[in-house]
Length: 155
Image (cartoon, rainbow, N blue to C red; front, side, top):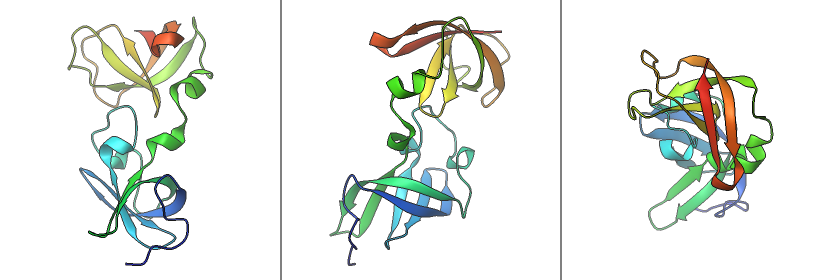
């Protein structure tokens, strides 16, 4: 397969979601090949299915993570395009209430991960009865920038 100009590791390209599987999404890149966007490369916060973020036919920007020309495989990433922790936390302030989405409610009895943005997650004190994907309001108790942590309280 001949890779067109712009198809190189680290480049950002436009693509269309062609197929969604439990392990990831197949994205047809405008410059040619179909690449695999693994589920762990979609978001910093854990998701159960790529369908939480994408739908078939949706147009997205992706970054080329790796190219294996010998085996004709292109691996893509999306989460790097969502901004880093420092960029995303600028939208939040301590002592405010914001909406978040529950992630992994029963994994740790010492806390529940709450997604504030696809690339920004905080930890709230454990609370019974919450379900994955549930929207909740959280109070931002503390933003610890040097440790890249956000302490939350479910309200």
